[in-house]
Length: 76
Image (cartoon, rainbow, N blue to C red; front, side):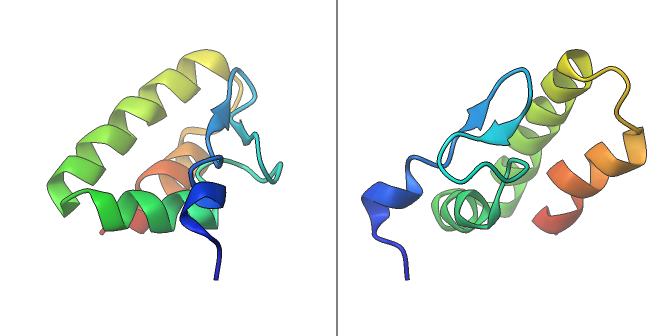
């Protein structure tokens, strides 16, 4: 299990949207765990939709289906 302070470092590095802590595509597993624990399902979905829109602007060549899977599918 990751210490809470370590999980907090799992934030996106824009414009690549890779995790600053582990280098995985963000939201990485630790970021997902933290966000899901801190937010209601509705608030989580709204936040991740906002991130999806920002990521789509930062990565215009990324397929929409991949962005949806990455940012939203896991929130349900």
